[in-house]
Each structure stands twice: as C-alpha cells, then as structure tokens.
Image (cartoon, rainbow, N blue to C red; front, top):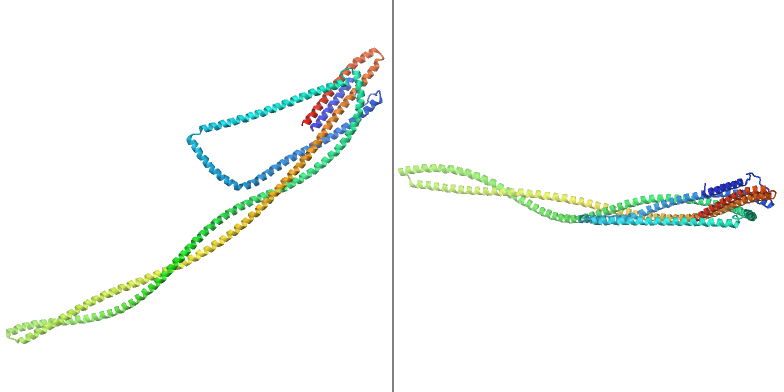
Length: 616
C-alpha cells in the first residue's frame, strides 16, 4: 500500500475512533438515527454532512486509485530509468569498444615507450638498490600515511557537516512543532473553548453553520476539481501509454541499432583482422618484393657479369680454338713432315742396316780374307823365311807385302765406314725417339685442347641455362610484384571503404544517442509534470481530509452542544435534576475537551506530514 493511502486510512480510522469516543462519552447510542435538531438548519447541516461524507469516501477511493496508478507510473518510471541506465552502460561499452579500436594504433607506441621507461626505471631501481633506498621508502610511507590522515580528516569533516545538518533539521522541526502548538492554543482561545463552555458551544454552532455552507460549496468545487483531475489523470494515462509505446519503439529501435552496432563491431573486428592480415601480407609482399628486387638486381649484375665473362670466354675460346687449329695444323704438318722424315729415316735406316749388314758381311768376308791373307802372309813369311833361307825371290815377297798392306788399308776403310754407318744409325735412332716423343706430346696437346673445348662448351651450355633460369626468375619476380601491387591497391580500397562504413556507423550511433537523449529528456519532462500534478493532487487530498476531519469534529461538537442545551432546558424544571445534569455535563465538557485535543493533534500531525511532503 502506498504511504499516502496508508496515511489517509490511519487518519480516517483515528477520526472514527475519536467520533466513537465522543459518542460514548456523551451517552449517544451508535445508530443510524439522529436526534431531532432544535432547528431545520442543523438537520440540513447533518444532511449535507452525510453527503459530504459520501463524497469524501468516493473522493478518497478515487484518490487511492490515482495513488495506485501514480505508484504504478513511478514503478514504470524507475524501471525505465534502470533500462535507460542499462542502455547508457551498453552504449558506453560500445563506445569504449570503438575507442579501443581507435586506440590500438596508439597503444603500440605507448607500449614501446613504456618498455623504454620500464628499462630506465629498472636501471634506476638497480642504482637505488646499489646505493640504498631506505630513506626514500620511509618518505614514501610517510607521504601515504599523511594522505590517509588527510582523507580521514575530510571524512570526519563530512560527517560533522552531516551531523550539523541533522541537528539543524531537528531544531527546525522542534520550532515548527512549537509554532503549531502555539497556533492551536491561539485557535482554541479564539474559539472560546478555554472559558465558558456554554457560550463557546453556541458560538461554535453558529460559526459551524457558516463553515458548513462554505464547505458545501468547497466540496462541490472539489468534486468538480476531482472530475477535472480524473480527466487529467486519464489524459496522463493516455500520455503515459503513448510514452510507453514510444519507449517500446525507441527500445526496439535501439535494440536494432545495437544489433547493427554489434554486427558492425564484429564486422569491424573482422575487417581489422583482415586489415592486419593484409598489412602483414603487404609487409611480407613488400619484403618479398624487395628481396626479389635485390635478387633480380643481383641476378642482372651476375647475368651481365656472366655475359661479359661468357663473351670474354667465348672470344678467348675462339682465339684459343684458332690458335689450337693453327697449332693442330702445324702439328699435323709437322707430324706429316716428321712422318715423312721418319719414313725416310726408316727407309734410310733399313738401307743403312742392309748396307751395314752387307758391309758387315763384306767385313766378315774381308776379315776372313784378311785372316786368310794373314795366314797366307804368315805362310808367306814362313815361306819368305824359308825362301830367304832358301834364297827365294825378294820381288815376290815385296809384292805380297804390298798386297797385304792394301788389304789392311781396305779393311781400315771398311771399318771406318762401318763406324760411320753405326754413328749415323745411332743418330737416326735418337731422331726417331725424339720424333716419337714430339708425336706423343702433340697427341697429348691435341687431347688437352679437345678437353678444354669440351669444358668450354659445357660451361657455355651451363651459362645459357643459368641465363634462362635468371630470366625466368626475373619474370616471376616481376609478375609477383605486379600481383602484390594489385593486392595492395585492392586492400587499400577495401580499407578506405571500411573506413567510410565505420564513419557512417559512427554518425548513425551519434544520431541514435541524440535521439535517445531527446527522448529521455521528453520522458523526464513529462514524468516531472505527472509527478508535480500528483503532488498537487496529494496536497489537495490532504487538505480536503483535514477539512473533513475538522468538519467531523465540528459536527460532533455541535451534537454535544445540542445535548448540553437539552440538559440546560431540563434545569428549569427542578433543581435537583439540574445539579445532576450539571454534574453529568461536566464529564461531557471534559470529553469534548479531550476530543478537541485529539482533533488538534490530528491536524498537527497532518500539517507535519504536509510539511514533510513539501520538504521531499
């Protein structure tokens, strides 16, 4: 139950209890019947009072319903505030996420700077550890303790201010209570309730007749105001329903935008990942392009160098080939000449061998002949000796000696010729051996030149293959470079497109935030207007309840006054009953005074509640 409804119910119960106490003290039976009034105006007032009570109960029911509706609206408002706070938190999270994506590039530099600072800090710490940092630690601890003391002093000052404010509120409440007590005393004094009860009651009955007439008109006006307030409450309900519908639409729009934002955030995350991958691929491609360019330049330089070397080698090979051909032709000519000379020498050698053999044979024959002649000469000598002895002819002996001398000369000539032929044969053999050596050398040189020619041909083929491979690698590098440039251009275009999409999404988010803030401001203004209207209605309800309680107290006082008048009329008949009636009237006056005191306390409580509500 709402506080206002509970307060009204408590006030009504207390008023009924006071009314019952008054009736029991006055000896009035609690029935629907009323005592006949001494005049028609009192009956009319009683009728108006009953009508006012019925209207009051109806108005109270209407106000309770309005209070329940207002409480429901307040719950919805609190719920909306909580949802708005949740939406604000979600938007702050999304904004923080977007800001985090923007801070990614900055954090890298900060981390690098932090790493440098950490290294410097580690060096300083090491220096402090080496030099001793006890004094610095004590100073730091002292600074922390001083800061803690300042914080505690600030908390103490805040608590003292709060206590002073509470004491000021308490003193204000005490002053207001004293003022209300004083005003009640003044009002009792003005009503004449502190003096003669009979005159005061008559005066109060006359005053209450005027008050009842004014209250009847005021209640009629309040009924009209209640109808107007019901229309206003209906309009406010319609406005609240419209606001609820707008809120639901705004929440659905915000939810859709949040879904779009989440999708955009995921897309941005994916795009950022793709961008990072593309950046990595770009760096790899640039490094690969640079490496391939360096390789290409090195290959071009090596190719040019190989071309120059190949050209020089080819020219040298041509020159060497020509020289080799010339040497080979010379060697072939020399070989042919040497072969011819060798053949001639072989022929001459064979002839010489034949001649030598013939001469040797002739020499052998001559030696045999010489031996024969020697033997014959010896025999001749013997014969000469014998002739000398026997006086042989000296002329024959001289002839034999001359012939023997000729044969010896001829033998010496033949031996000299044989020695000369042997010497020529040895020279021919040496020449043949030297020619054979030259022939083998020439053949080895020809084989060596053939091997060099084969090696040069193989190197030329390898150089041509390397050149083709380098050309192919250069073409592949150029193709890869073109593909990398194309991929980089496409990635830059995609990154530019994604940047535009992110900017568009940020613009939409800003527009949504603006629309949400405008909607929240409008809802808060409307809720403030409804709250103000409900507060005014509550003030009017409390005022009407106070007036109705006062009217009820007045009517009970009028009833007591009528009973007192009846007792005064009975005094004229007899004195003894008069005394008894007077003695019985005194408790009635006492009970009336108690009732008025309770009514004053109720009015004071309601006034304090109104003041508390206005202070809230």
